[in-house]
Amino acid sequence: MPRTADLSHLLKLLDDESPVVRDAVRKELAAMRRELPERLLALPVPLDGQQERLLAEILTPVCREDLEETWLAWRWLSTPEARLEEALSQISAFLSGWHAHCEEMSRQLDVLAEIALNDGCGDDARKLSEFLFGGRGTEARLRGNSAEYYAANNSNLFWVLEKGLGNPISLCCIFILIGRRLGIHIEGCNFPGHFLARVVQDGRVWLVDCFNRGRFMLSEDVARHHPAANPSMDEIIHESASVETIIARVLRNLDEACERENNMPRRQVVRRLMLKLMEE
Image 1: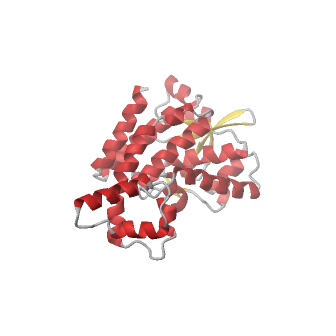
Image 2: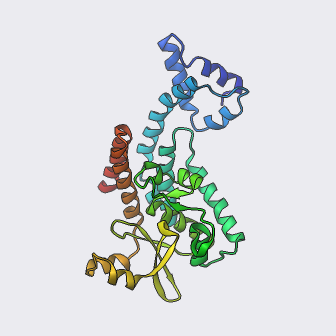
Image 3: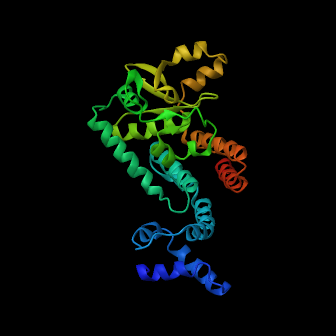
C-alpha cells in the first residue's frame, strides 16, 4: 500500500505531459481504488477540482467494470434480506461514484436501527413505521420525494439515507432492512405503480405506504377498492415480492430516470444489469 507521500506524488502526475507516465499513474491508482478514499482523507492538502475530475475519469470505468463482473453474486447469500441489501448496496455505490463503499450502507442501516431500538420500536412494525416515516404526527426521518419523484437519486440508498427523501420502493426497502435488524419481518408488495411494504400483524395482512407517512392499510380493503381490482390484484397483494422482483423494479426505475436525465452512459450500465438479471 503506497505511503501518503507516494500518493501525493502520483496525484501530481495525473496530468503529466507524457502519455506513458499518465498511463502508469492510472494503473497505480486503479489498483488501490478500494483504499483510496481513506488515503485521500489523510493527505495534508485536499484534492483540487482538476484532480477530482481526473480521478473520476480514471476510476469510474474501473468501478463500473467491477460492478458488472460481480453483479448477481448477491443471489447466493443465505437470506432474502441479505440478498436485497447487497444488491441495493452495489447499485447505490455505483450511483454514488468511485469513492463509495458498498459496506458503508450496512453501517448506516445499523446506526439507524440502533436509534430505532433505543426509541422503543422493539419488534413492532407500526412503531418502526412511525419512527421512520412520521406517522401520527411524529417527525419523519424519511419522506416521499414528491418534488423529484423520477430522479435517479431516489434509487441510491446512500443519497436517500443522507437526504431523508426517496421513492416508494427505496423507502420500503429501508423499512424492510431496518426491520430485519430489529427482528421484524417485513416484505415487499409488487403493487402496480406504487410499491408497498407488506406486514402480517395480529393475524391480519397490512400494506404499508412508506411514501405517504407509512400509512397502514388492510390488504382486503386495498384489493377491494383499487381501480384495477381483479383476481390478479388479490394475488399480488397476498404474495411477497421476491428480491429479484424488487431489484428488477429498481433497475426499471433507474432506466427511466437515466432517460429523463439524458444520462446514456449510466443507462447502458443499468440495462446490462437488467439483462444479466433476466438471463439468470
